[in-house]
Length: 120
Image (cartoon, one colour):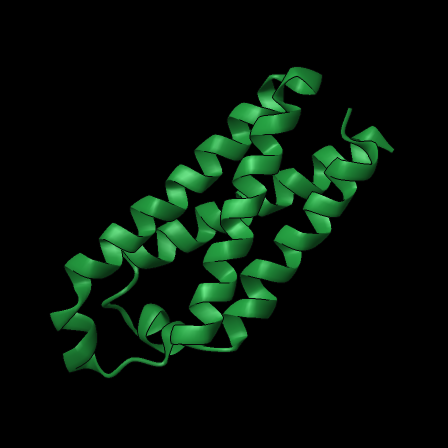
């Protein structure tokens, strides 16, 4: 079951790397605008802010990767960064789009539950 917790955490890492890619590299493209429901004007005007957001998603992925790399010794690190993912997802859902709750927070909650149950 420990492997299940690791796989779930790794899936959250992959999700955040994908979000990083969307926000840093695709924000002002048809794919980015469709994903985030943006007008071309808004996407162009907010490109730098989106890249900053993408960088933060990269930090979440890096922290979770670090926790995975440490194995059992990374238990507290995984809990901390999954907590950050959940808080970011809840905040994003409250301030931007409810979709973020399901895309970001729910996978974080599931991974955190598995880490808490089987992560040691």
